[in-house]
Image (cartoon, rainbow, N blue to C red; front, top):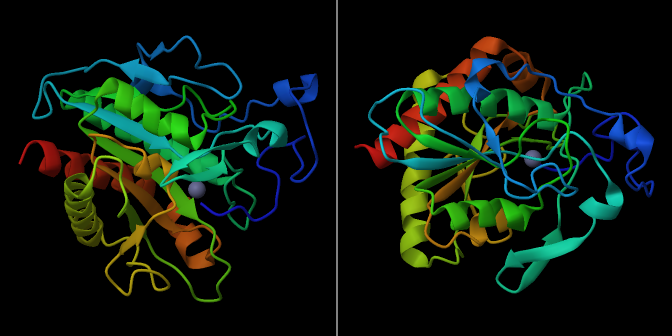
Length: 284
Ligand SMILES: [Zn+2]
């Protein structure tokens, strides 16, 4: 979630003004093969623009408990950082503005947060489609720019999706700070009822992650609840009718958390916990 002042991709040094140059264009750090999970992806007309807009839609691959449901999967950040775009201020809800996007954090071995988010997001897409859901995906690959945080919410609003699942990893520089937490907005455009439905979804996600047990609840935010209520998350604030949560899967700056999060088994489990939460919210 939080930038650590390091480039998110080669050739895009943080703090250095970079426009859409050929060297930036050459960077396509897609760390995870799309595989079958994204087969049949239909990209929006603006999905390859900078910043990208519209995301993609993926039809169900089977019939299941999520038949007829639509879910936005939002892997946080993106592979290429263009400061001139990322620094642009966009509406963040509550009359505030916020930077279009950030580079995200990175693990101590240099693995970028966006790649981890993408890896889990692709897994989640596959699981949801196999259970009957139509999936909206906020970005079409792990090598683009944006979309801005307000556009991520707009994709959900335009699509009238039933649930928003945003995926991040935190970057807290704390000696012993570790664990996951789920962020919800207490100031959603959809009002208090929508905020309450989102908080319910967050509680269900915490329960699923507890059941997995691969990572503890955050030791540094949420007071042991695994939930953090905030007013500054544009992608949640701007939602009109879709309940939404933002999962900080763990603290990427923690060696203990990264030892877990770097494994395929953990990424499978995180995606499974998110999919199970969608089931419990939408097909109780
Ligand atoms: Zn993030």
